[in-house]
Length: 447
Image (cartoon, rainbow, N blue to C red; front, side, top):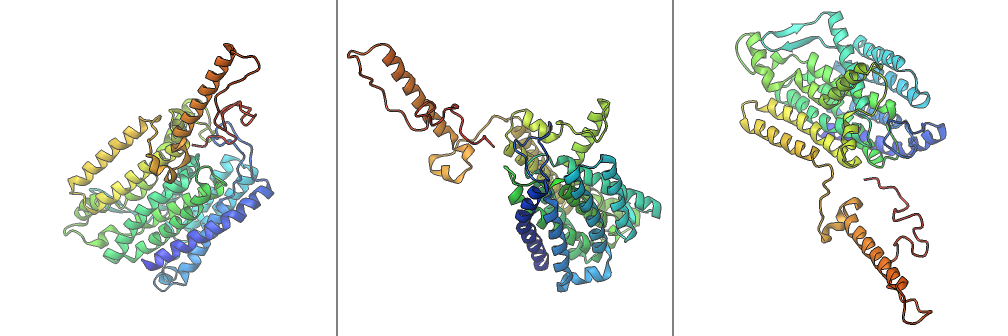
């Protein structure tokens, strides 16, 4: 575990430190596209954040290759090299798209080629655990097609959900934490070495997301772009393929009996097939809804619009930050709910807890206008948007005093030449030209 944490920290540190220089490079290179109709940000923001994330991935793999407990992963498995090859290709395509905005079909072809490169180097699905049937061995063509499909779906699902500041990186990071715990338990608790590559991929992916998030939280200073969203989508898919299609569930020997009975009883407990899918449950649902919506309108499935889940949250009244937090909540609920169910599927408390938290999530969705009131003593510890009530009340009171004084002056004074007016708080609109354009401040409200 210490070596995994070291790998995570190195990956996060390299990604974080490189994101600043990459931002300056993106500005110089002109990778700052104009604001489109579907965008929610108000100022042109540089892309190419995937450059820093890719070098973080390379640093994580390099460090892991020189660690005692993780070095054997590179010696006995070709999966890390397969991941690096596919990641380099998909990253290059993403960089070109961030700069020149290449056609969607070309990107799709590049995604399929990247998946094929990983398949050629051994990162592929060999069998599937089917409930009630057992382990179903796949032919080479079946495994290749299924692997390519999973990679393409995951990449585009993550790419589609990358619409708000910090949304994609945060959701992937939350889900990857649950996936890391699942893969680590399969490897350490049952001694299945085939789960080690997936555990390594998960730790590196967490580092990539954690290192980039400080620069990408609202208001974002840089976007990951397609070079970043497609990259983390591919790494996520690689871990899912490794743990799903190459770890034989029957090796755990949790139950006695036939292979069919073993897999049938073990699926609810360890969910080797469903756990990876829960990681992209929200992005995949958004992807399916987008395809159905665009096809129903007679548009191309790759045509961009403002109908994604995060756009809907903004439309019903949620702020930018709250919409992101709600998406975080649902991602964590699905991923960790599946993880808890895999540990103990017989516990009714887990089911009740998931149901209760789902109800909490629904309540949050129905309260878009709710803003929590913070005590005076805690004002300094919360974001500014939760401290505006008092300042706004004081400004309104001052404006009312000004209007009352003007009304009294217009009504007439006992002595001409006198102008008795009530003192006006500083910063009120119309006073000394301080806020000549109205009560709105210099900076836009980014809550």
